[in-house]
Amino acid sequence: MRARRGLADAAADLARRDQLSPDTESLARLREADDLLESTILPHEHAEEALLYPVLAKPLGSGKATATMSRMHAEIGRLARRVHAHRLRADRFGHITSDQQLDVIATLYGLYAMLRLHFSQEEQSYFALASPDASPGVRDKSGQDR
Image 1 (tube, rainbow, N blue to C red):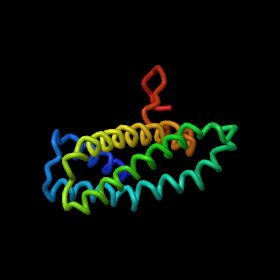
Image 2 (image 1 turned 180 degrees about the vertical axis):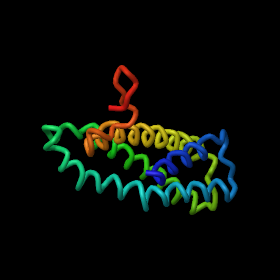
Image 3 (image 1 turned 120 degrees about the vertical axis):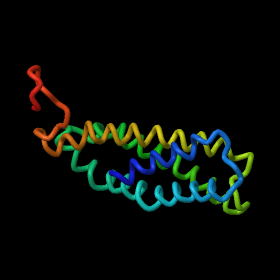
Image 4 (image 1 turned 90 degrees about the vertical axis):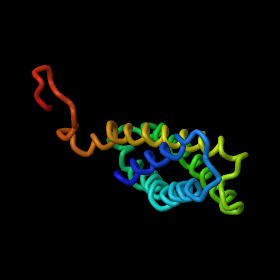
């Protein structure tokens, strides 16, 4: 979970630069984001699709109950492919080119927003199924944890 949040924060940090400079630091950060996507985020998302969601279908009453999260995985994958394409192009030129700067920023902001939303939804929806008594932050009217 920490690595996934780290990627979301790294994507936001790189995207927050109003202008990505044609320096090696911007390219190195883009490479780091791409590497983390390829080594951690995408394998995790694929494992959820293959292993977790089929198991959740029964307690949720239908495989359709995970359709929203599956769609989000598809969008994360699309944005990850875009990041990778930008990395390959920047690697060819030795820097992030001026004509790709705005799309790199937009892609990273989009990825940041998708990952933050996705992680929050996972924590609120699916991880709560693991233990009904372990729902963090759920309190009754008296303020006691339920």
